[in-house]
Length: 356
Image (tube, rainbow, N blue to C red; front, side, top):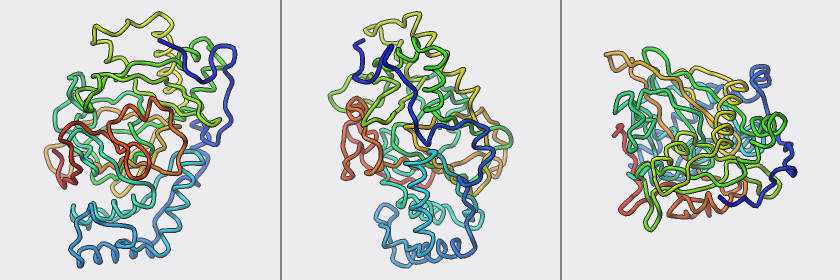
């Protein structure tokens, strides 16, 4: 594996970034948590009614079709904090309990448009996704995506600029969300084991898990730590990196690589912050500076005890410059000038209202 163009070895140094935080920092602050006011909820209600009256499909809704006179400004402030601040935000109070599924999806879409451009999340072209257990607890099958299982999901960043999760319903038990600053991991790794941090500046093969763009290999490669325009862009998908070892054509891990993989997981656990979703919460994460994982969960026998989140993957035209390897991971560049998400031959953007 060739070295990346970023710092390596003795040239490695910590980066200064507002997204460098520890769990205690997040616990002590509340400026990343945004409670919707009655006025803002009223604006969402009115915007939903306007969309329904116009008979618009969700995919056709533009910002002007979903007016949020005062909430718009607040959402743009949240977007700025996501891209240029800590990289994490939590919006609370979307009244999903009194919305139909269609209305909740409309509301979430209208809010998401203020934060980025929705992109395809899988080979089926879902631009509004469902995080729900459809396959049981098995995440070892190379064609299963973790968000359709109830299994513990290891630390990762999604394959987009920003990911948003709207909680419709929690599980009977479990399903806690953990987040960690990948900038903090980077800096701590350099302080403790600069030799292993250097391994992360080299390309790592990742398993596409069957979602293969036209003309591409069933794997792709990219360093974990990338440096673009003086900023750190982290791409961590430990499950997919380890999964790529199933391809005999690829080199086996060295001892240093194995140690580096283990250290990232250790640091993530050590530095992480945990939260429990409530219905109506929207968690927003900047994937290039924040990693996340989820504990396993158990659904109950009744629909109101089945964990269900709506997910948006968002491209952010004003976001950090992307390394070329990350751009090449995809098959399509969207109108935003950023990758348009996951596309394989035959993929067409769709918005399902039920998990599939």
